[in-house]
Amino acid sequence: MPPIKINHIAVVVDKVENALPFWRDALGLPLHHTERNDDEAVEIAFLPVGESEIELIAPMTDDSGVARYLAKRGAGLHHVCIEVEDIAAALKQLSAHGTELINNVPRLRPDGIKYAFVHPRSTGGVLLELYELP
Image 1 (tube, one colour):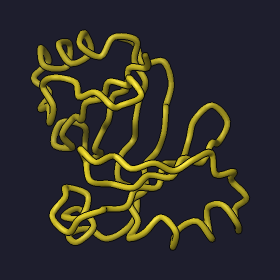
Image 2 (spheres, helix red, strand yellow; image 1 turned 60 degrees about the vertical axis):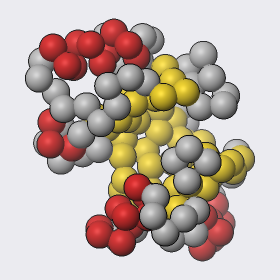
Image 3 (cartoon, helix red, strand yellow; image 1 turned 90 degrees about the horizontal axis):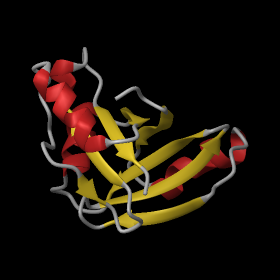
C-alpha cells in the first residue's frame, strides 16, 4: 500500500466565497471548480498547486461533521489526503496495525473516487484521508 502522492490538503472555512479572496485572488491559485458533497454536507473549492490541490471545505448545515469541527477548533487545516492505488488493501493494512479508522469501508463520491478517513488518534494528531481514484 505505498502512497502515490499527496492528493490534497483541506482547509476548513466558514464559507468558500469568504476564503477565495485570499487563496485565489491574493495568492493567485487558480480555482479549478467548486462542488457540493451532500453526503458530507460540505461545499468544496478545488485550487490546484502542482500535482496536488488545496481544498477549501465549508459546512452546508449546522450539524454536519465539518460544522462541528469548525465550531470546536475554528478555521484552518482540516486534513491531509494521500492517494493510494487500492484503498481496501490500505484500510486492511492499517487495521492490521491497530490503526483507528473512522471509515472501515470506503465511501464513494459521485465522480467514482473512493475515500476513507483515519482517526487523528492514530496519526499523531492529523486527520488523514485516503483516496483511490477511479
